Length: 149
Image (tube, rainbow, N blue to C red; front, side):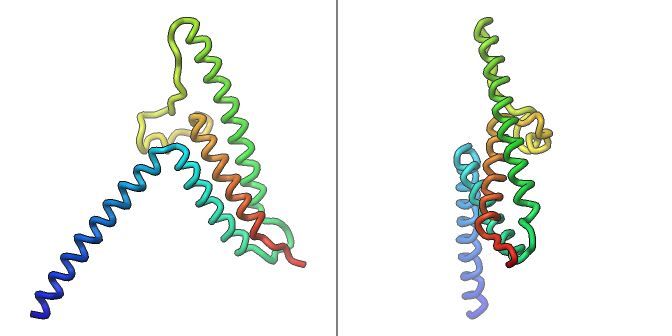
């Protein structure tokens, strides 16, 4: 009788766990489909990692190098996003004159292949997300790091 009870509890817990897992994946999929939610999740993760990293390195003589690297990467990504947006706008304007409008489509065939696209070919939204992530990372480090002395 004890084995039967354990079996029933195990099956019920596995089914409940599978339902929670499935619901979690569906929720994550909805979040990742929305560009603004991806920015928010990236910023939150960057902020948390920055805070943890800043605390880990607190007490050092100089500010962490990752702070400066993050700021430079954010600036480069922001400049690249503006340049890409202008280029796309110029192409769309020229295309509108001839009747064709070009969209800012990511290079690749979609899905995981877009992860392998080199950064200089990223779409504007991906460059903006990268800049937001790096700014959040730098902010987290700057707010949690305490230099020695």
